Image 1 (cartoon, rainbow, N blue to C red):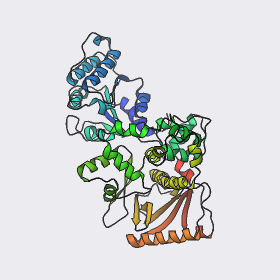
Image 2 (cartoon, rainbow, N blue to C red; image 1 turned 120 degrees about the vertical axis):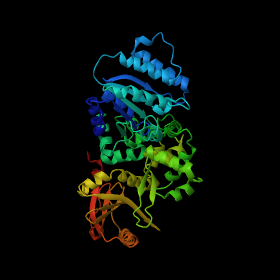
Image 3 (tube, rainbow, N blue to C red; image 1 turned 30 degrees about the vertical axis):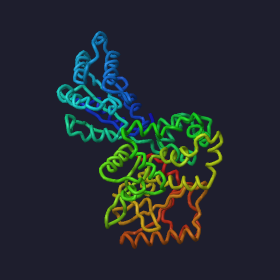
Image 4 (cartoon, rainbow, N blue to C red; image 1 turned 60 degrees about the horizontal axis):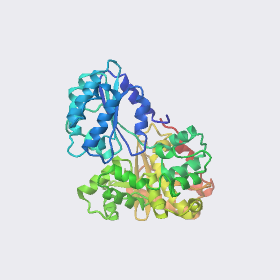
Length: 471
């Protein structure tokens, strides 16, 4: 298995625990949650049930009972339980029949779909844990769901029968660039870092998407097949994602579309206007759910006056879908082979390279050799100027990061030199900082080290640093 070292070790440690454990696992759709649990607990799962999308209580109980009959013949002649109280009573009977003293894993996958309206699923699950499992020392219950907002609100922050019962939670995120490269290598696909970056800009580090990459194809052919061919696997993925994650997804989609049209982060007030939303609790709830699900990320602004947060769409596939897939369906077999070379795409890819850098700040800090120095990441903007990544360090230095995505070494022209000087001067003046402010360049293939370079650049790193393993 690629990556997931911390998560794997945490789950394995639970097998050696002297108490029963209740674990919550969440993360966006297709990120590999189920694969992780099955891979680690394959020999220990004694009961597994997966919620049925869109199914009512009766259908969910049907599924539960069918899975119970698969693992125990004693229920073959029994009637299906009428409610979740009876269902968990049957699960107790099954567990009581197991003689092994080793840990017994109960895997409840896609829990949000099982917990239908007025079914009291959570209440009886909590009762099952509190009155039965906690009294034993050999039970592990894994609660898993793609609807991260549901998992956070109803499991992790539950105020009812599950309150403060969790042993721990695991947020499963898409692969980093390092993990993406390792995953492709396992498939005998040995692309260079620049080509992997192009793929990552289009579909991100979602394992399910990466698994569809085929050896022998170029990155351009892969994106064409997955995203633009009439039967491409990712042509209609956008609608499926939001329909399955959020019961009322209109507000979520409007927020995503508003952010997807921008190459930068914006404030909450700006986002409300851009999304044409009335604001209030419904907007806040939708935005928080998108953040919990990993589609949107909020960053603090480097602003001593108001400390406003800024919001950015950070799900690569959603951004690529809105910009290129949705407007260009049924454009033919050679559509992407032509468009990816155009300057409009190269400029757009540059904005998304910045977002990818924001996701790999740990790698940037490793390259700067400041892992051991406390630092705070933020962004800064003023009229006509913006810095997406500001690293304020405890040693009274500030790294202002400029990210450029080019197919060749980047050259700082005289005009660009003046722009960078003005940006740094405005940053110092606007923030009133007394720290040392230096410019750090992160580019695809480096910066040409001429007079302009030496005039203003303190550190320069190529894209390879983003592929470093920081675990």
